[in-house]
Structure formats: C-alpha cells, structure tokens
Image (tube, rainbow, N blue to C red):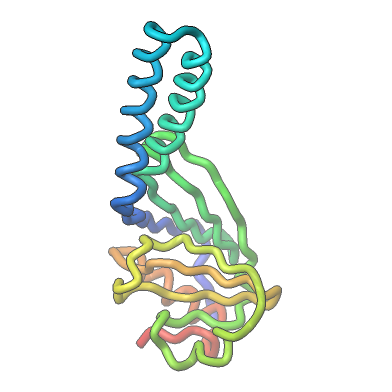
Amino acid sequence: MHIETGCLEIIVKRHTSALRKILSIGSVVFTVLFLLAMFLFGWPFLIAAVAMGIAAYFLWLECEVDYEYAYVEKELRISKIQRKSNRKEIAVYDLTKLEILAPMRSHELDSYRRREGQVFDYSSGDPEARDRYALYLSDGTCLHLNLSGEYAEQFLRIMKQLAPRKVFTY
C-alpha cells in the first residue's frame, strides 16, 4: 500500500458572527468618542481611547479569519490566516494517533461524543455545514474541520489509506 507524500493544503473561511462584527464597529466608534472626550475633559480619556483602539485592532483582525489545513508526511498542520495577510501556524497533529475521522452527524461518532478531552474548532463555524468533520486522536483531542473543495477528496483518500477502518466519509 502506497500512502501519498508531499503537501496538501485546504483553506477554510471562518464564518464571522454578527456579534463579532458589531463589537468591531462599536469599538471603533468608542475609540473616536473617547478621543473627542479627551479634547473636552482631559487626558484620562486618552488612556481609554488607546485601550479601545487596541481592542478595535484585535477585533478587526478576528473579523476575517481563514484556517489552512496542510497535510505533510502524516501530520496535520493548522494555520490561522487573519485578514489574508497575518499567517500563524497554531498547531501540528500527528495523524498516526488517529482514532476516527467522520462527518459530524455520523453515528460512528456516538461513543466518542461523551469523551473528555480538548476540542478545537478549526471549521467555518457554521453548524449546518454538510462538510463538517470530527477528527479524534488517541490523546483525547478532537478537531472540528470543514473538508470541502477540490483538495478535500484527495485529503480524505489519503486519510483512508493511512487508516482505512477509522475514516468514514458518508
């Protein structure tokens, strides 16, 4: 059996909630209001304006986030891309520890749902998405992923070659 090597990348755009957008816009508005209040009431409002400006920047970065899944030599590397420019690798998972990979609505996951462990959501955030998968590792880690697009089928095929009895795609 030959398992494909090389690198395979899938990019998933995270759904931005309305609350996150409102907080981002609201923080910009409050930054401007605090700056105006500084001119009227003094320097204490400058501190509030700077703090709110910093919050506005980080909220702005979080409004447009993509996740990149990169399969490289039996490892899944997850990167977070903010505003299409700031890219940071956030995790690397050893796929030889794979216990199961199945669609989120699959009955194959029933016995795994009650397990204790860390859950990391690297999906689009849309609970109704049909391409949402759960990947459980032997160390108790659970990953939520969206597997769609032109490379998703190839990724699933590679995973099936790696662990044929542990990957479900229906």
